[in-house]
Length: 377
Image 1 (spheres, rainbow, N blue to C red):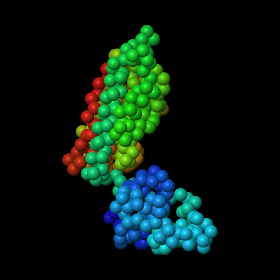
Image 2: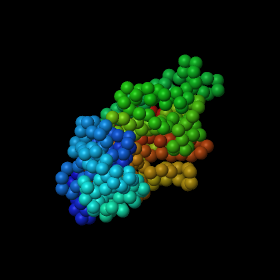
Image 3: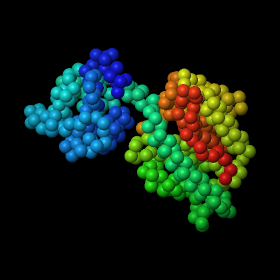
Image 4: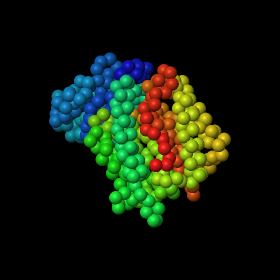
């Protein structure tokens, strides 16, 4: 945790303290311990990190985390509770006994507890140090994310195959084995493929027709032929916490000529962006290049129409994290895992989005995504 130690030294602070559950990505990253109840992470300027957990979690914390582990009882909390008659104040005093009275805390610390801690210690709020550390992935993290992406592609293949094998009824609806193919049934297929690999599907987008013009519309009901179907999948491995992210757009039967042209334009934009990626490249420059390309191709952005979202984002223990490929995106560096997801959306016509992910390397960009791009299935 050299970066965290440097921040402590720069700010003349004794110790970094976080108090949260592992649902906080920074906490999970630092502690390497999965728990739904809050626990305490303590990192002194000189020395090893320590977790303070309940007695029931001690053995599991020792097994899962590389940090030292101490129970709340061993840290004196029961006696402090008797003395102060206030669980939060007693916990704050316990932290001070372990961490000193000049403490750096994350901005995400619950405000109520932070106020209690401020009453017994000098508290300095840190903004973004751990999130910045998380941006640069280790080889192990990259391997874990590649694996989730592979499972995502297996799920995507099952979903596309369902659409491909479906038939078109007299109303233009997709039907498979006499059963309507719906957004929900496609999501169920995706979930069924992911589940044996301990990967969770949540809020997967399977939108069709007019719904595709709203980038985050989940989609509902029957899927139709000759219409774009946007499938945006971002599963998480429940054991490791890491996400993947991929979007493909397909159509059962040929869609309109305009949808075909939009699709080809979005695909060209994505490949152009991929070629631009590398260390030192500004995320803003890549986003702006894609925006300019769309305009040159005759696809303007105005209001809710056109290229209405950022080109891409970092991904890891959160589905959206730094760095950003946006109008304000900064320099990319080796180890950043990012998505590239250009899209065009026009009410009355339809929406198209394509998305790949990969890692910035010393020499450019290593794309994880290998899933084919084929509009008509």
